[in-house]
Image (cartoon, rainbow, N blue to C red):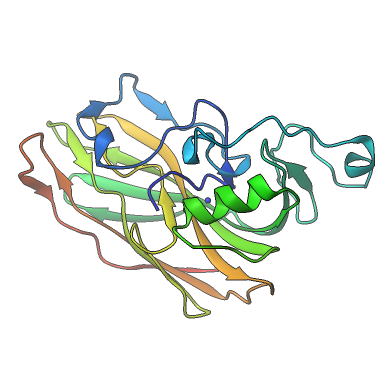
Length: 242
């Protein structure tokens, strides 16, 4: 919450240094615990968005004295804000906490949180990382991202490698996918039998002006075994009213 994770964690994005880039290179990595927890998305994009971009930004006293500053980055109430390690100011705009579930084959997808975040790039590195994460030549600040947190439960007897989110459609007309301004931390993850993955994805909602979002539609891609044989078909569409 945001193209192969290079990305978007948002806090959608610049998460923790332990955040990982979502791409096919992650395939065949099985979750080793009963419940894998993705790094907390407290940045505009994950730290792995670019290893060459300095990630040592620390806000000064003037930037943190306003009401609503959250040092930990765990934004829960609209108006709360934090800074990531490249100098992006993230302000929570909207949060939808109602749970939504859709199934396809042996996989159950449960949406646990949808939120929109206003991102103000206060450094050149912040703009550079955001543009790279979203596969854009440049980006206007502020820009707004939508973050979806979700879990994937594998109810089957075989490990499944998920291709993550097929597409997200926003009511403002934006369509987000792995090839179009979406960073999906779940793509390429292998989920063991009777295990679940807790993860997130971040995508670009608008640049310059705050988006007016009434609904979000999401569909998930299929799931495969290690030989790339399809085990789970793509899901149908799940509509979320924000």
